[in-house]
Amino acid sequence: MARIEILKTYKLYIGGQFPRTESGRYYTLLDKKNKVIADICLGSRKDFRNAVVAARAAFGAWSGRTAYNRAQILYRIAEMLETRKAQFIVELIQQGSTKINAEKEVALAVDRLVYYAGWCDKFQQIFSSVNPVASSHFNFSVPEPTGVVAVVAPQDSSLIGLVSIIAPIIAGGNVCIALASEKMPLCSITFAEVLATSDLAAGVVNILTGKTSELISHMSSHMDVNAVVYAGKDQKEILLIKENATLNVKRVFVYQNDWNKTESQNPYFIFDAQEIKTTWHPIESIGVGGAKY
Image (cartoon, rainbow, N blue to C red; front, side, top):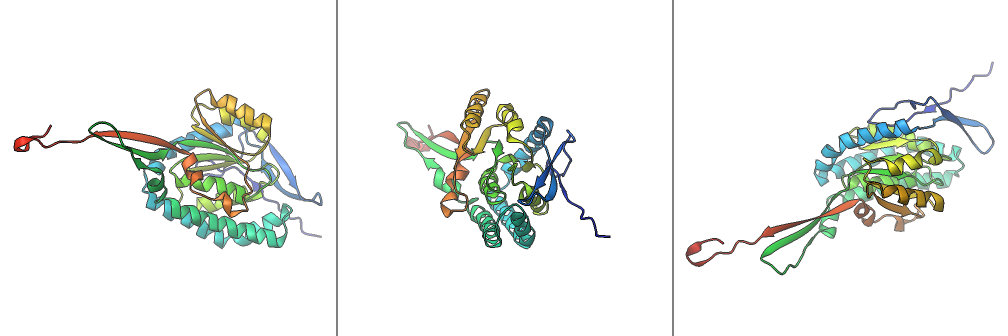
């Protein structure tokens, strides 16, 4: 008898764990020849809410880490991805990529993580400033992380698009919940397995699979989400996100990049998910006899 292949069920990644969707729903992913590749969880509103709770719990500790330590962890993610590149190449090929393109995509994803690891302790100097003021004060403006960021990953990219959006968000001290590509979800949960073994604290990155049409309203209207990143071109979805974002004044960013190009990596993607904090400090003056006033 021919052996029956045991197909993997790709679960969610929430709070450092790999739970099945609470809804119990799945969809079957097929290749171009209509052969079954895997079973994929259909994430629900409850799954997203659980992910927000996990992300918020992780935000304080992650944003409080030194920039150098965040750089070390992003570099470790790149190391772990490098050691499992063969698996990612196979998954990309299963989803329709050629072997050459799959190898390039995995290599680029590793390099992009290293790129943002290098920016972790440098972007503050680029985007902070000492401001001139017409009074006896020092005035400083410095970037600080926004908080919890909801991400709708590119539909036409399995790995590099997801990595290109997540990396700058966490490099800046934020936490995120990412909804992976519905059509090409394999690499997203495999990447979650990389994250789980790379020193990244639980809850900093949470990855869901499922339908954008079902989750986008919840992602953009949740009151404990501080920003939404949408990588797509659907104008109805963009309008819905912007309308829902007004409920708690979320920041909304729409990316329509070709993530395979080097132009799609720069420190401004880190800056997008930062808030600018301005501090005033009085200048002490020394008077006659050494008195301060």
